[in-house]
Image 1 (cartoon, rainbow, N blue to C red):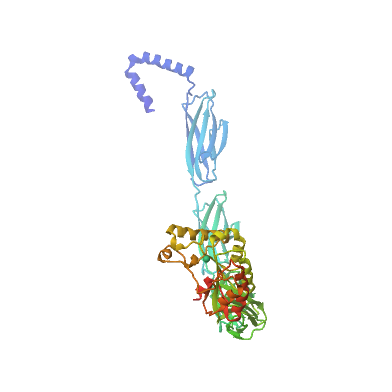
Image 2 (image 1 turned 90 degrees about the horizontal axis):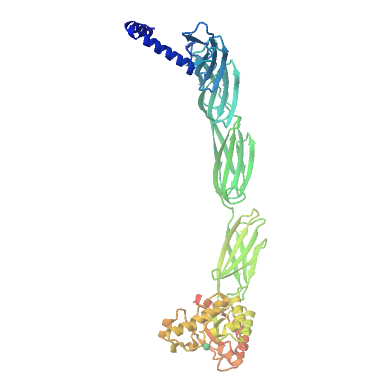
Length: 597
Ligand code: NI
């Protein structure tokens, strides 16, 4: 109004400009009506809220300024909540300029009004407002003892309640993050409840408080419930021997009146290799059991309360057999090869259902064998065939499968000799092998590399039957007349020829003619073996002569030189081997002879 007043005042002062102004005004109005459909009216919207609490009445009134009295205006009212998340038409175009609504949920509202004149000109106005819930809720829990079985009570309340509203309450509990849960009371007017937790854990009580408009406020309260009792286990092991009685007792310490506890006892041996239930859940809190096997034992006690809560306690102990294996008794008819050895297994006590196994080893397992597998026979015997150190082992098993072992050692005395054969293999070598095998003795063959490829079968036989293959150079040259590289070639070619067939390189070298000097020795990287007794069988091709040469002045450790390239030698060997065995000499390989020196 003050603006118009000002304007009129100025017009009075500027009469000279009146005509111009009238002209300008009529030009302006003519232009506005003809080219721009701008409404000639203005509007406002007033929103009246008695309280910002949801559910309260909101009235909206639209008004038209400088209204044309001949005009009839129409009004459309729309509300929206939280940016059109929800909305509704209150009143579609009608002459009613005032509406009311009751928003039931809290949020940011806008009331929009479209005001339309008869020419269809529309002006839109909007007014925002906010509705709050208008009330809040609270929850309090009472946990007098934080022990399962005790009653927990919870009470929910409303702060700033509206007297136009009614409230209902729902209570839910959850334990250990919803691992278990339950509804204590569904929506009702009851605002206090109680419940009794049965399992230990971390609890939350939730209260949903709902007003009569359906708005829900959730409150929660947390607390922890303990078991309220504890258990212990004691095992009494008067003796850690099999067959003795072990007792176990579980004890409960409790602040609860009557836990109605049940007990389960289980034993396990060697980490559940074997196990058993001693007693399944019963009111008996002490048990006994008798371990039959040695090992590491564990007793488990599961203690369960009336609500199903279980505490497990364990106790460990070791059990050994109530018997041991004494050293086996060894009885020998003599100390030479071929004399019978009797062995008796010696459990420290008489075993009902005992079983006995006997094994021998020769020279620290260089050979071994099972004399007798598990059987009820406590006695066994075997006949050592050659001189050396023997050990007999007894495994004794009782009726429950417990095994204890023991051993005893003795030496079979005898003179050792090595039968060595040079210059082969030849067509007579197989015959010599047959004789050695017949008497179960071993020889050593110093082979010429040049003979090896053409006698590969006999080389294979030597190797597989346990005879020793040694190196006698490739071409049987006197090494003292050769250069270092020639010496090396003579030796290496034979090494390779043997390895190609047997997969194994010879260990020992015997130079042709036994010819060595310092220079030759410096070029040989393997042990050189000569002989202590020369039969000169290459010179006198007579079996009887070879036999006599071999056995005359024989002594322990002799290395006898033969050549497996003569029929007479092969024939002589057939007599020599039985003679040696009969006279306490045992033929072994060079390696065996060296190992026993
Ligand atoms: Ni030779």
